[in-house]
Length: 334
Length: 184
Image (cartoon, rainbow over all chains, first blue to last red; front, side, top):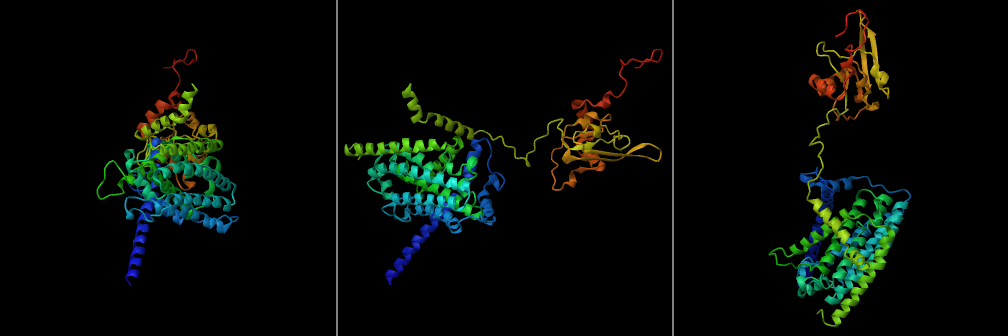
C-alpha cells in the first residue's frame, strides 16, 4: 500500500513540475513577441505597441483572443491529415525539450533529469523542422512549399554545425546530462565554458539563429519573397501553434546556450530564495540579443547562408573539437 | 592587408558597429506621434475640406453663382444651379461639391472673384458613407463657420492665395478716356 501512495505522490510531483514549467514558458512565449516588438520598435525610433493597456501591456492577450476566434481556413486542395498534424509536430518538438532543461540546481530544478539530455534536445529540434516541411508540403501552395524546402535545407545544414559545436562542451563536461554539464563549469573562469569554448560558443550562436529561422537567417519565412513562408496557408489557432513553436524554440535554444556555455544557474553571487534568477536573467539577455540582431541585420542571400554554414561554421566547429581534444590530452584544461 | 581583411571578417567588426548603432538608437526618443491622442496642428494654408464663405453683412453665401470655379475645376466636381428671383436678381439655388472627386488643386479658390469658395485647414473628415462627402450649400457654409470664420478667412486668404477679389477694382495706372475724370 505505501508503494502505491509513493507512486501517486511521485506522479503528482512530476505533473506539478510539468504544469509549472509549461505555465512559466507559455507566459514567456506570450510576452516574447511583445518584448520583440517593443525592442525593435525603439531601435527603429518607433514606439511599438502602445494602445492595448498601458504601454500596450495587454497586447499578448488581445493577440491570443484574436487568433483563437479567427476563422480557421483550410485550403480545399490541402493534404488535410498532414495539414492538421504539422503544427502539432512543430509544437511538440519544441515543448518536449523543456523537460530536460535544468532551471536551477538539485533534483527539483529539472522535470526529467535524463542522461542523454543534450541529445534529446538536438533530436527534438530536428523533429520540429519536420512540422515545417510537412506544413509546406500539405498547404499545396508554391510559397509554403518553397519555405518548407528552404527550412529543410537550412535546418539540416546548421544542425550539423550546432551539434559539432556542442561536442567540445560534451568533451569538457564528460556527460550529456545537462545538470552535470552546468556543474562541470564551476571550476572554469566565471563559472562558464565561455572562455575555453569560445569558438564553439560563436558557432553555436550563429547556428541557433539559423536553426530557429530567425533574422538574418529567416529565409523559410522571407516576407519579401515568400509572403510568409511555410505557414502562408495557416490561419487562426493553427497559425498560433506555429507561432508558439517558434518562440518556444528560441527559448529552448537560448536555454541550451546558457546551460552549455554561460554557466546555467551560476552567477557572480547567489540570490537568496530565487535559485533560477540568474538563469532567467541570462535568458532575457540572450532573447534580447536575438531581437537586437534582427533589428540590425538584413536577410542573408541563400547561397551566402549555405556558404557560411558549410564552409565556415562546420570547419570551425571541427577545428574546435580538435583543439579541445589537444588541450584535454595535454592537461591544459582539466 | 589580407590579414587586416581577414581579421575584419572573422571579428564581424562591421556587424558589431551596426549593433552598437541600433543599441544607441534604442535609447533615443521615438519620433512617433500617437495620432488620435496627440494631433499635429495642420500647416497654415493646408488644402483641406471645402467651405463656402458667408458674407458678414447679409449672413448669406458670398457666392454670386458666376460659375468660374466650376469652369476651372479639372475634375468637374462643382455643380452650380442658379435661378431668377422674384425681383429679377440672380440667386444661387444649389452649390454642390463632390468631395470624393476633388483633387484639392485649389484652382477654384484662385478663380473665385469674391473669395467665396475656400479650402479650410480641416483634414479629419473621414466617414462611413459616401453621401456624407456630397457637400451641399448648407454643409459648405457650415464648414466655413466651423473651420474658417471671418478672422481666419482674412488672414488665410491674404497670406496664401492673393485672391482675385483684391484686384477687382480699377488699377490706378489704367489708361482712361482723354478728357474724362482721371481715376484714383
